Length: 340
Image (tube, rainbow, N blue to C red; front, side, top):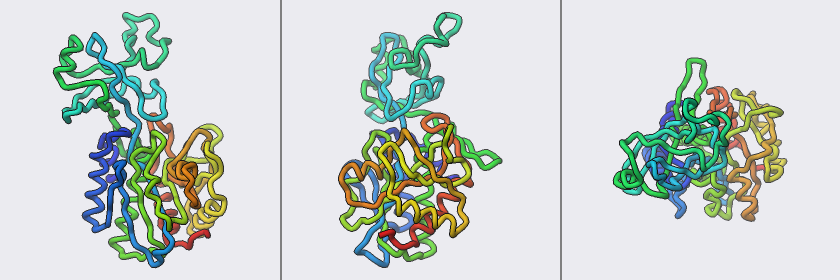
């Protein structure tokens, strides 16, 4: 839980993930785990298994939703364009950070232009969109030139304050639990494998992807020997969904179509054998790095599991029970035989 808190506190919108990838790289380096970066900036850790002729790959993505400066308005406020699939209303009133190209960081607040009910009759009804929402910088600003003097320009990244909190009841609520909850799980799992000197049955790659929120991860780095590819990403909660905040969610199908049936049954069997709480579910408006790999033409067995996350792509929350159940299922999965 503390590792997850550390991860969500590092700004990492898709396209600007160097800092958080460096954090993960250092974490793994201290464990003595072999890692490498691909040209897209993702990180791959590899643990050699008993069988090096057949591989597994697990992936979780460390990039998050965010925004980018689209325009500096005459007032000195910033128009923004979104990075990732979410709605403007989910960031209204949010504190944010703007990072200039020279590395300077400034704070601000994302607001409707028509925020003041004492001035704007349509404050409650105006559409939340790219034209009406803007960033109010916490600097003395009167013009475009004042903003430019700070070094802020079109193309600068905007990240959202995670507002992370761990409650006494075992919940963690924060932005960016998608998918840093899964990254924390994989890092802790690697730590246990290394420190306990557990020999995995197959060479296993752990891909920390950095572009999933915009539709492409590190799938160009799937080895020819990879048989199974398991994405570890959030389970979606809502009306008609089985997924909850206390169990691991096993995805049967998302917008890309069904996941590999035999692998799904294998994961369910492992959960039942080891008394791990789970839910099988369908995510109708969802895609993962595993489904992206299938679309890219890789000949793999693909699956998707993850902790249940409430209010995904908005004000997210999960419980330590869901994180624990996901961790346990992954642990036993890594020790199991390949489905093939």
